[in-house]
Each structure stands twice: as C-alpha cells, then as structure tokens.
Length: 439
Image 1 (tube, rainbow, N blue to C red):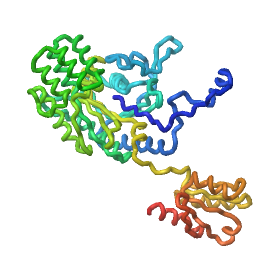
Image 2 (image 1 turned 90 degrees about the vertical axis):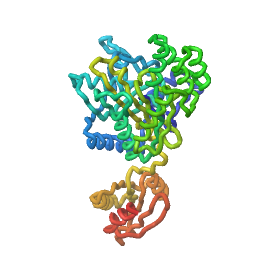
Image 3 (image 1 turned 90 degrees about the horizontal axis):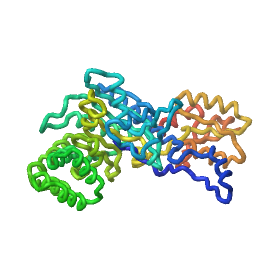
C-alpha cells in the first residue's frame, strides 16, 4: 500500500548561504522546515476535512469501525512479516535504547491494532486513517493515507470472485469521487497468480523468491520474457508467463486464460470506476500481495491509490491473521491530482473601514456574522487603494465603510474576482451575499 503521492507544488523554499559562512547559514535553520515537510493552505485543509468526513460517513453506512493510527511505533512492527522498509524510514532510539520508527507503512500498523484489540480470529472490518513518514520521498516526506481493511473475513473460494476486495475497492472509489470529484479508473494485476505459477514451475521457495524479485526489477517486457525463458523449465508455466508478460490478449494455455478471466470478472464488478484495464505484467508489491492487486488512477493515469489481498503477509506477521484485504489512497495524492480547486478565501467578506468608524464597523460585522457570513474587518493602512487590494486577496466580497456610508446606510459591495459592484443597504447586505453565493 504505497499511495504516498508527493505534492510538487509545495517544494520548500531554500535559503542559500551565498557568501556567508556555513555557521551563519546554520544560524538560519530555525527559519526553515526539514526538506519534504510543508505548511498546508486552506485548499489542502478543505480536501483533508472532506476526506475525513466522507471516510467516517462511508464507514457508518457499511457498518465498519473507524480508527486513526498513531504516527510512531517500534521498528519490530514495521519489519515483521515483510522487510519492505528499506530506505523509507525515520528511525531512532528512545532513552531506553529501543528502536522506534515514525510509521512508514499502514498495513503493519493495522495488524498491530487488530492484535491488540481482538482475539479468537474474529472477523473485523475497519476504515482507517494514518499519518505516515518516508525519508526517501524527498518532496513529501510526511503524508496521510486512508482506506479500508477487512481482516479474517472468510477466504476467497477457489475459482470464485474476491467479493471482500470488490466491496472495499468500491467503497474507496466512491469515497474519492464523493470527497474530491476525481473520476477513478482501475488497473488490475495478478501478482498472486504469477507467484503461484513461478512456485509451481521451480518448486524451490528461495529460488522462486529470487526469480520474482528479478522479475519485479526488470524494466522492460523483453527483460521479463528473457528472464522467464532462461530461468524456468520448459512447460505450461513458462509458456503462460511469456504470454502474460508479452501482453498477449489471446490466451496461450489454460493458466494464461484463468489469469485474464479472473481479472476481467473482478473488473466488471467495480461499479463506481469510470473504466478498468488489466495489466497482468505489473508486479508492484508482489512481495506481499497474495491474490489480485489493484491500482487506482485518475483518467490521465496518475496513481492515487492501491490495494489487494495480503493473506500470506498477515499470516507471516502473526498466525492469528489468516485473511487480509486492504485498499488505500492518500490525501496528498488526491490534492495533487484534483483537476481544479476553487480559490478559498480567509473570509467571505472584508469590511474596509476608516479608523474613526471602527466601532460602527464592529457592530456591522457582528450583525453580518449572525447570518453565517465570515467577515473580516480591515482598517485603512496607508492608502485606501492599497488596503482594498490586500482585502481582495483574502475575501470574495469587499465594501468600504466611511462617512458617506454612515450617512446613507448604503454600501457598494464589490466582487473581488470580477470587480462587479452592487449597491445595497446594510440591512439587505447579508441577503444579497447569500443570493450571490447561490448563483
């Protein structure tokens, strides 16, 4: 589950030491964030809150528990079952010499939560949210994942559809589309089937694992086919894998046909996806996926989530976990991939006031706020033109209040983006703003 999603637009500003000494440069460290960490803006916070609200809503409708996983854990949690941490981690020792990690992966954290709270192989479905940290993601080292996990559900029947994975996938796709408006496509792969074929052909677990690792590293179709041809004995398995990796849509034998049939039947049940495609040659996360794998993408191909069945990973982590389905996405990935986000303002309305009318302005602002309209008071600083220009950056609507407005009881409401002007009484001001918002 690797939906980290870097957010390139928020590369932190570098302060160059120039001709200054390195010591002087270090003195400015308090003005900088560590690389890959960012202060987020109002658009990000809205996306974040929409996703959290929709996650809770989806969990409630589907009868799932909801948890927020902690950001810290013992290193043994994250390296148990599958050593996939590699160069991901922020790790350190506590005062007692125990090795800790900022959480780099959600899956082992979910396993830990389950084992802490449940026994007797109880089936549990959960919606989860997790802050994660990966050192190697140099543009976005701190990020947030969310998703759905089904633990110890009855296993997939041989030859049958993986309904728990279908259900979790549809829940995630619906959540993404409801909270961000992004249309989602699915790319389905079958790393579990490929592992079964390699294991059957070689019969030696250590050698099979090495072949799978090399297949995962291979950068081209030609490399994969060459590797299969040179390392697997002649027979049905080698023939099937050569056909799978070549992208041959015409099955060359029964194994090849079963692989495609399973993927297409699964894809046809992803009812909320705009479309799906099969890519059996994709071995992403093959070291931990047991059955089908799935990548969730935008219409233009950006990956915004993934998931699959992780039964062997779960059993290796702890024998009490014998069945695992998990799918996830990331807040940063979705924020980056959103086609268009409306400009968010710090306040809906700015009231620009001359200092001698400050008390009047506060009374007006209080009355407007009672209608649910966020209102900011800005005293004229320098010139009126400069203050209005600053107000337009932070508010959707603006009006100036001075002696003329006090005398007539009317103001000129200006829309910041278009400079359109509307004359209105102070009494009718809230109503006009609400009408403009509806329009």
